Image 1 (tube, rainbow, N blue to C red):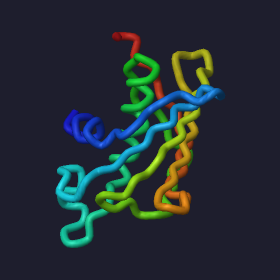
Image 2 (image 1 turned 90 degrees about the vertical axis):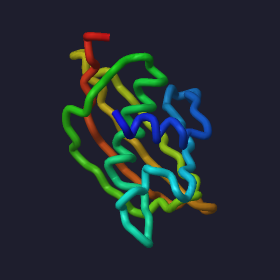
Image 3 (image 1 turned 180 degrees about the vertical axis):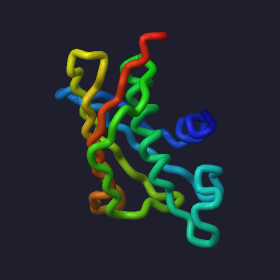
Image 4 (image 1 turned 60 degrees about the vertical axis):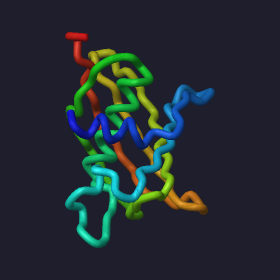
Length: 128
């Protein structure tokens, strides 16, 4: 998908902490295609790109393909602007039925303001 290339370009770091959470830091520069059309003259990172970033980091870290199956809660608290670093902390719990229960908390800015809160279920693709 088009977004995966753009998301990969914005990844600054990715690691798993002691609890097994995926901690990924991003920064998309002004002029990145990820901001195209959202919104001209006042660019902010589209929410769908944050969802795609979660999926991308799960796949990259766990080495599996997955797809969003259900989102029980998606909240965006702070806009993420060009050249603004943000971090996603992604917790995954395999619920045993080839599905991951995912909780993601995002922060941005110098004071690590809460930017994103996602609760979702991803299905692991057996075809990989």
